[in-house]
Every structure is written in structure tokens, then in C-alpha cells.
Length: 303
Figure 1 (cartoon, rainbow, N blue to C red):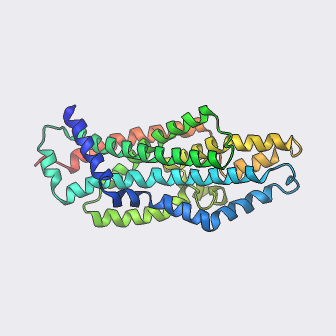
Figure 2: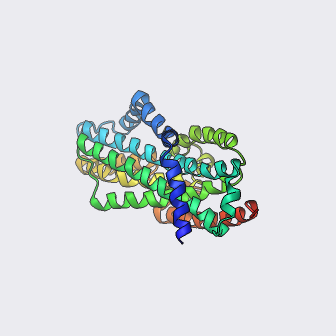
């Protein structure tokens, strides 16, 4: 157990000591924030405005800002759950490329302990990074105005951080075990960074895509977690706006917001509940962990 803990600490230190690795792991989140400042905010506001025709006198501009800022924070956290674990797991490829895995295999650690150390280090690193983003984001939203987020929802957000980080790490672990050098993994990371924002709906709400594309996007565990992030962050403000409207539209505006910004993930033939999403993400994580242990045992043989 001591060896497992020590090796896990070593993998985490390699990530956090490399400032450039930390920055690049947050690259997509930085891009989401930059695009938000340039034009995404206007696009989202226009989309919301189309749903509030005739209700302008009942909806405060500050509530719309809170709504859009919550969408931004969701996109930043969702993209971080994809890119941070992947970047942390790059340690596996570096160890293999530099033949360090030979020395690691010669230690008393069993192969399943070695692979789980990589997995644990990446999961913990992602949990920490996303938690920092979430904390800073909640503080910023609170400074700008009332967020209408309950203490229970805040606790659930940090819980979803754990679920998302663990499941995403398990998913990408299988991919990383297939790479033999950092050049290939870096090229794949470039593609992943570009696609991540679209997959989780950070740039364009996934509800704008076809049913097939939505299903493909929601095969990734991070997409389900992002949907649940979005629901938890926006639930309070949407309910507040709906209460302010006072039933004049029979809840049409609130329903339009939920549908437009995907408060439920679409998978195969319809929307799925949060419970179903959690079951899917959890089951996928367990399967991926089992596969990673088998793959590592076959790929990284003792020398």
C-alpha cells in the first residue's frame, strides 16, 4: 500500500510541477472563456431573447446575465473534465517513451497497482483542478449577483466533480495505453481540445444538433456530467425567473430554456434522467477500469 501511495504522489507531482502541462490541460477551458467574451455571450443572450418575446417586463436583465454566466461556468468545468485527466495521463506515455516503465515494472508493485496509481493520480488531479475552477466561478457569480443556488446544489456540484473526474479518467486511460510516444498523444490532445467544446455543448447547445450527433456526443461520460453541472447551476435562476413570470406563459419560457440548453442528456431515442445518466457514467467507469487493468497487464510486461 505504501508503494501504491508513493507512486500515486509521484505521478501527481509530475503534473503539478510542470506549469506548462497545467496550463495546456486547461487550454480548452481558456478558449471557452475567451470565445465567451468575444461573441458566445451575445449568441446565448440572443437565443434566450427569442424565447422571452412578450415577457420582457417580467424578466430582469440581471437574471439573464446570471443564466448566461452559469452556462459559461458549465462549459469551462465540462471541458476541464475532459482535458485535465487526459493531460495528467500523459505521464504513462512519457514513462513508456523514456523506458521508465522498465524500472517501474521491476518494483514490488503489482501491475494492477501500477495502473491504478496512474488512474488515481489523474483522477485526484482532475478533482482538484475542477474544484478550483468551480470555487472561483461560484465566488465570481456571487459577486456579480444572486446565483439562486442552494447549499445542497453546491454540495452536489462538488460531488459531480468527483464523478466526472473519475469516469473521464477511466475512459481516457484506455486510449492513453495505446500510445507509444508523446508525439502521437500530443497530436490526439490537439484534436481532443478542439472537439471537447462542441461535444459538451460549450460553444453550441447540443440541442441544435441532429439526434444522431447528440447521441454520439453523449456517449462520452463528460457530456452527461456537463449536463448535470448545467442543471444544478441553472436550476435556481430558471425557477426564479419562472416565479417572476407568474404563470403567464404556463411555464413555456422555463421549458424552452431547459430544452435549448439541454438539462437532460439525449441518448439513442430520447432524453434520459439524471439517474440514468449516473448509472451510465458509473457503469462505463467500472468497465473501463477493468479493461485498463487487463490492457496494462498485457502491454506492460515485466522485463
